[in-house]
Amino acid sequence: MTRGADLQRFLDAAEQALQRTTGPAAAIAAEVVSRWAGPGQSGAGGGRLPVCDWIAPALAAQPSPLADSFAALQHQLGWARRKSADPANTAFWTGHANAMILGPGGLEERGDVWVGATVMAPGTLYPDHNHPPAEVYLPLSPGEWWNAAMDWTDPGPDGFIYNPPGILHAMRAGEKPFLALWFLPI
Image 1 (cartoon, helix red, strand yellow):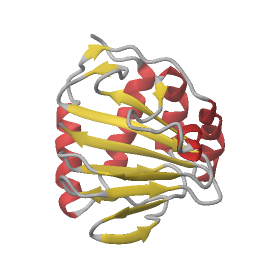
Image 2 (cartoon, helix red, strand yellow; image 1 turned 180 degrees about the vertical axis):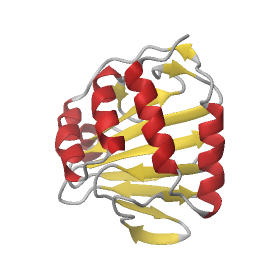
Image 3 (cartoon, one colour; image 1 turned 120 degrees about the horizontal axis):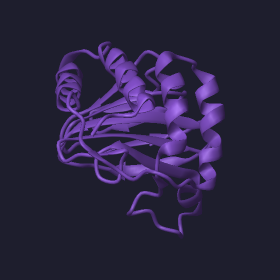
Image 4 (cartoon, one colour; image 1 turned 90 degrees about the horizontal axis):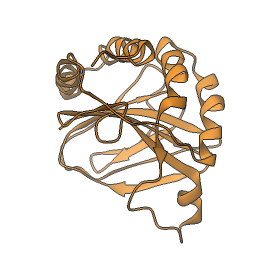
């Protein structure tokens, strides 16, 4: 499989952005980048939810090469609600979407790395959750993260968030839409 130009441009920009990570996040970032070095199997993509209308305003908040490359790619992605989302929690149900870029259901089917994106409408809380792999987030807009080892924080446009394996964590949008990328070695 040959990668499409939009996907390769995004991965190149993501690699550059991940180079600003430090500490344990830098090791996870390096592992993720090494795993995507070779292309995976061609994936599906496609599909949007109404909350995806917040992507363009979120991208306008913090222009960058990574944001620009994501903008070119985001319409190809399959956007969906978190599988555990409860329709009774209307704010979360209608206020968030996730998309896999690399990994199950992504533009590249992969079992060794997950790269994805989350968009949230203003005022949306992504509930507490955890998972075995460590995770690095790169913000594409203002937003806040929390985990069991830190208070709520906005890392800023050049920052990152590291979640150790298995730690309970959450994220939330403030008065503006939230857009972030996540990277997990599987």
